[in-house]
Length: 132
Image 1 (cartoon, rainbow, N blue to C red):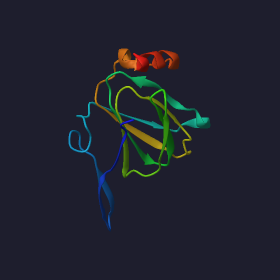
Image 2: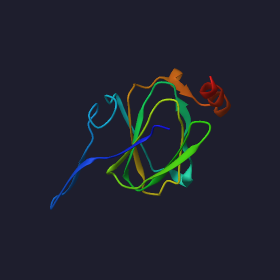
Image 3: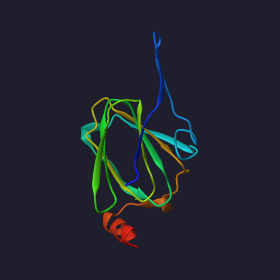
Image 4: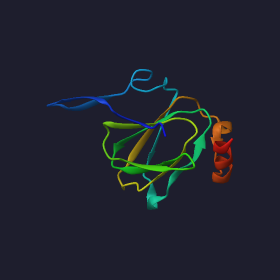
């Protein structure tokens, strides 16, 4: 699985920290959409789908959560617990997100605008997709 874990260019000084991520420099795509997940009550998982064409980069700007990423054969777990780490997931991988801390704010940067046709939301359909 070609998942990239990058460390954001971060400036630390007496005023605080400033982390920088630039599309097409630090990420393999131009950023077209940004969304964030927060106040995830009662530990409900998120994700639970794959994308046909969309890249996603995940940054926990506060708190922590776990990405569970699979290609249908192997699974990799990544704990995001610092805003300096960015996990970029290419198209064609199934992502589940769970183990949210109560204070977690997970920001997601994407390569495409929202398109429902790009989603694969059924895991059995996903397994057929990756076998094809």
